[in-house]
Image 1: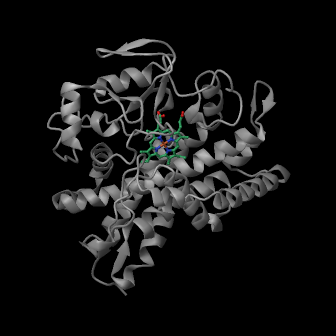
Image 2: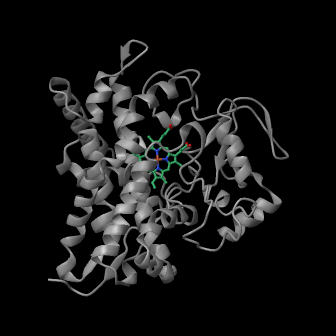
Image 3: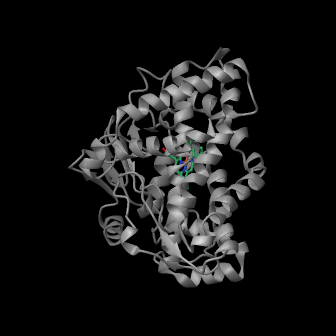
Length: 383
Ligand code: HEM
């Protein structure tokens, strides 16, 4: 994949994919151009006819994008998120400690999956005991983009129905008695003098619940894929844990949790041209879909010297794994903090480990997310 991206950057940086009729862009500079110019490269397919209701902020353009996003920016600001650290630490320690006596732990299923779901459920004001259902449901949404047709079929509407029922019950409960959570904040919010419609509320909650868990799970899992491949990085972190944040930026660059393309059916992170425009030496027509390829931008030698080197002290490291421009990931401070705490907790509680049963490590084969479904490790039992 990396070799192919490198060839594409050199020979065909803006390329038309015949299979799905979409443009793919490979160079870092073109990513910035597309993501900065939201007037020409819209996130909102069909928005002109139906901009108003039932859309995720991911699929909106200004001015409505700005209005809706600003309702929750303070809840996701670096300052607010930093205040969650003690709670996240407590959760991470609980999740890891319960496995110390067994001498085995699956970094993905035992830590990286539950941690972000529990945190976002708390922030939203969503019942915590539902976390396993939220996971199943998020997986089923992502399965829509699976490369494996059997997995696509497993993406069921039953789960969606039960999830929507839970959301509806929670909304009702908060309407009666608001709390200090994002759901209450959204219920009280007004845009242009009007409360959000039920459709807007649902899709906002779904976006936050789903965007807030799978990607962060993959980041933590991908960090361990990197530490397995580059054990010296783990040893360096043991000696100097203050390097954890910059190591995570390198993991994000090296193995981005999002592939930056929505496959051939739906677009996520993709854009639609609102007018004819020249990109590189290619003529893009109004209505054409343009997909970014995050992994390619993150290895662009014009931006990253020695891009194949995994360097946990790389500076600067302006990878595009959280996107760029007005849609830059709202949850980036949260994802960074959760992953930092997860790695620090592992460094403290399980500084020495070896990979466990490798047959259990299953790569996710999906057009949208990149990562592993499990990462078992073994270590000295501690009673
Ligand atoms: C947007 C990646 C974690 C919520 C985005 C975008 C990317 C991204 C690439 C931009 C999409 C585009 O331009 O179309 C990631 C990665 C994560 C992560 C790699 C973890 C490592 C989170 C978390 C949340 C979150 C924890 C919290 C709830 C959102 C939201 C948007 C977004 C709401 C839409 C922002 C907008 O359209 O203005 N994310 N994300 N993400 N992310 Fe994340």
